[in-house]
Structures are given as structure tokens and as C-alpha cells.
Length: 185
Image 1 (cartoon, rainbow, N blue to C red):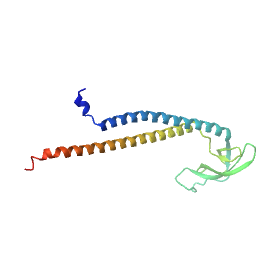
Image 2 (cartoon, one colour):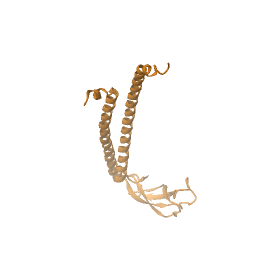
Image 3 (cartoon, one colour):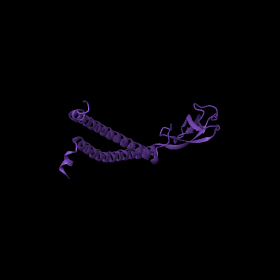
Image 4 (tube, helix red, strand yellow):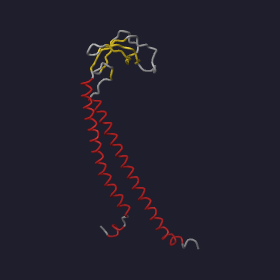
């Protein structure tokens, strides 16, 4: 490498090079960190799946009245709330509103989930739900990390561009009189 080539390299170029390499290394760490976050969320979700499967029981409920075709908060959906009755695993009777398909008649049976007290609860979380939540968590961590790195890179670029512009202005002040001296006579 010729000596004049080495001296032509600006300090700001070296700073950008170092920042780029640090950003690449940090980006790899962000990927690993995001994977770890997603895996941890997934594992917690699997634990929740096990707990909910142990605590929740599928039960059959019977509608107490027709699932009115015209009544609903949102008439565009195919489901409505209707009163239903069911027995828990100990034989106690419970009733509450349940979400059913529009037009289902009184006496119709629907599947619901209950907890240990017999109260209606959502269906237990599945392994697919845990995976989806883990992927979303890992994706959010990845997006946040990449966004942070991009923001830091933009700050470095702005600082080096500001330094370069100031240097170019100083150099132009030195050179400009020589360029314009003979043209204004």
C-alpha cells in the first residue's frame, strides 16, 4: 500500500468502519438474544399449557333459549351470547352466557370448558399458542434490537458527516481564495 493512500483515509472513515464492525457483531448478539427470549417465552407457555390442561375440564352445556338471529352487539358476526346451563364434575349446576353460533335453538348442546369450581373458562392454551407467543416475543426482541442498532448507526453517520462537512468547509476557506483570485479582476 502506498504511503499517500494510507494518509488519504480520514479519521471519520475509520470511525465508521469500527462502528460497522461493532454493529455487525452486536447484530449477531441481538439475534442470539432474541432467540433466547423467544425460547424462554415458549417454555413458559408450555408450562402454562400443562397447568391449564390439568385445571380445565371440557363440559357440555345446554342452551336455555334460542340464540337469537337478530340480537348481537355486532350483527356482522356469526356468533351471539346466549344463556346456557351445565353441571360441573361434582354434579353442581351452573349457568352463564356462552358464545354460540347464530340461530342455535334452545336445548342445543355446546362444548365449553370449566375450572375446578365449575365456572366457565376459556379453552386451555395449546402448544401452537405457546409457539406463536414465543415467536412473537422473539420477533419483538429482534425488531427492538435491530431498531436500536440502526438508530446508533444513524447517530454515528450523522456525527461523521457533520465532522466531514466542517472539515470540507475549513479546507474550502483555505483553497477558495486561490481559485477565485484570478477570476474577479
